[in-house]
Length: 381
Image (cartoon, rainbow, N blue to C red; front, side, top):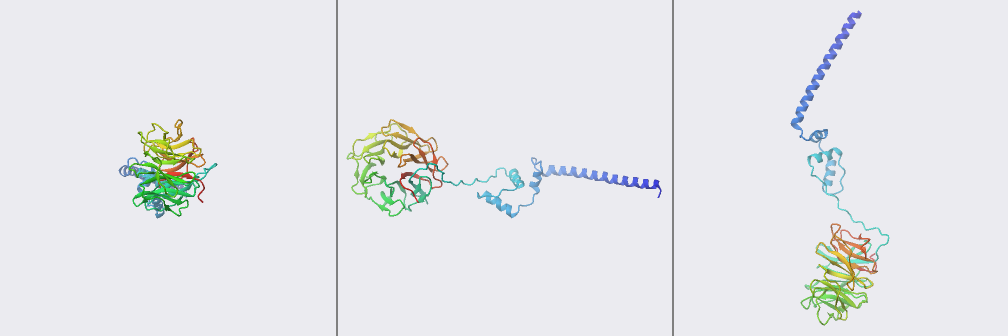
């Protein structure tokens, strides 16, 4: 074959390849134009990315992925969704969110833990029962399974028993039960509705409020419930009584001269004296410090109550809490702490704090509306 003939063949092949290339380019251009037209007709106006195409034409989820998504929506621990699926949910259902898991309360870690135990009321199946917990937040326990509400519990001075009120035959009567929930005994009957029963620090007597005379007045009786009588021969309107550490004085709440305020009376019935003046919304049981120099109490409107302490002469008044609805305070037996209920976490829980309001610590969680805490010596094991 001649050299000229070979060159002619090569030029033919080159021209053929060029023609094929031009045809391919034209076909690609046609496809691109058609694709753009299709995109304008099918994709959402705000879906300008590859993710939008994936959203429209993605393959169905595998059963495993669906199960993980369902678990997340039901509030259980959910497997993290793949990035593409997350994008799909964000674009197509922007309001879709998973409820955050409910936090589980963990008892605090203490350097200098408070000593003793706390009795309080807790709701169980819609009825307030007796519950106890160590003051450091450990060993919570329900003690009673009563058929009617239990109210106003408090420990005996030695921490061995708990006195409380509950309904029997349609009236509130006083009961005593061992601190472990055993040997429950009714100790009063037929003297009206009795509330806020408390055993004296010397262990001999009980103070309570009774409505047997048509209005609530302060009564005292022996520890076994016998010899019950008004503390004063002249009835004085009053409720929520509490013993002083010397067992000779009783603090109580009365509105006899206007708005409810704290008063003191001798256990012998004399020397009634007003402690607080002009405090709005004062309510509930107060409590004495171990040295007998201070009283702790709650005041303020429902939903906005605060904890206060006052000297027993009423001259030194201090607010200890600020916000969160704080109520039902009580001193620790050693006089170093105060326990109270607060709604600051979004639900009512038990808290403790120092006498100046510092070292505020939550000691309970998920206890069923704890209320009316009272501190006692000893520990729950």
